[in-house]
Length: 591
Image (cartoon, rainbow, N blue to C red; front, side):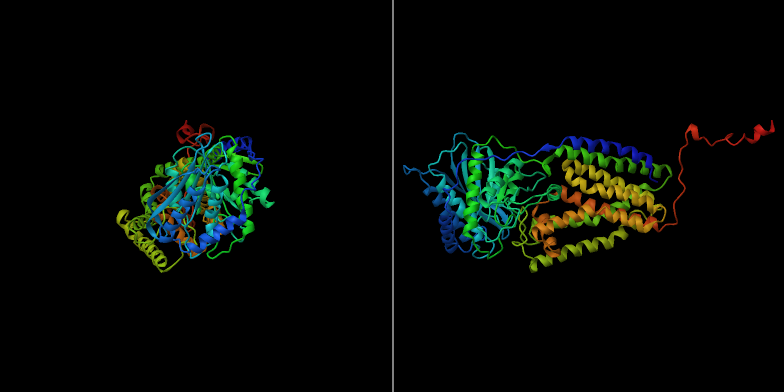
């Protein structure tokens, strides 16, 4: 059923796109530097302040009494930062907003201190003050450093406006950071999120640039903070890597606060001793780390204050010392998706010319996708109604959303819904089609066409996510061709090989976030129920899962059929095999 001439011809644009990508590689931007020494940041004073805050506010669940009391303390500390004449340096405001957290819907206080600079473009320092566990002194080191930096900048002249933000909800959903991103009060050049600067152990990478949308923080911002960190620690933040960047762009997700800031178009990175996950519950404090990382933050702010305007968050992939831009990735992925689409269109047209029941196969493919789509809809609806427990609007760390009894019951309910939908699928098929369609190769053509169209729809939104379907489409096409010749094992092996990119994506996230099977399923449930994965994205992933499974079932069924059918091909003038081609017709011989 596959016309290989069309497939080979459609691969030519892919070769050209690879050449264009090779010549489009750009050099990595240089880091911005500063000659100002960061000695004004005193690590001992910051450690003493941290210990005082941890003793006074041991319980700081988001929106709780301790969290609100600490917000008032932070506001007073901001107002206490005065210049040499005793004039307050910052204009301080505290705003409450309702948001979804790990404890359900809560009212969170966002404290914002603003000091005008020579221009109105702002550099923002942001830290969350809440914690899921009791004590959690290391998680307060970001707030302690924020207050210490407020004292450092008192009386100092800066080019840019300085904004200090204390948020809540950072333990899950980053609701406070999301509120600030929607109410910045002016243009923002860069945001430095202060994580656990005083954590006892260093877990690289120490700088987190990821986003909850298919972009990352500008590479110049990341390299500037990395250069400041290298001068204080003697070593860099740790490599992000090409594979990790591709995974983060194909399925955008971050459990730290810079994720929602980059999503809203604010260039932001998180600096912390434990990286994205933050310190473990009950983790200790290292005053040496607080000194080094606090000074690195001050050095980075000094460098950014004198730098030229930074770029907005964008999709760029590091390749050694080079950078691959998003437009080049879009061009390459689109060229790679062209061959399966054109081949599948031709295969479906051939099936229709042979009067095969293409409509029945389309119905069959939809019944395979239906359990995935309806289960995703059930999770989204249950999340809106609060049936599945707390579900923050953005991703939460697996440490802050444990797999408790409520979570286990929710996972069991979702599994039961999917199983019931899968069991009723044959009954729906009998009611709609009435019989099993013949010629599995025609069904494979329909499934490949549907999956190709879905890949192009995803490509229009996020070419990195569409790249995950390139291997399933090409290898599924080859597998369906092998199944026509009853070569079942190689055909299924090719189909399984097409799932390698998705497996690598899951492995990457599991390794970076410390996810196991249950915690991973719990996080996936929270992402759907809380709305981090929107309705259209949920529908696309569900259809993709159903399409890939349908292709596997058709490859297996085609390999178990009676064998390949003879295919009718049109013949051109040079291969004419009609009357007279073998020495004349019967009427001509009589004459």
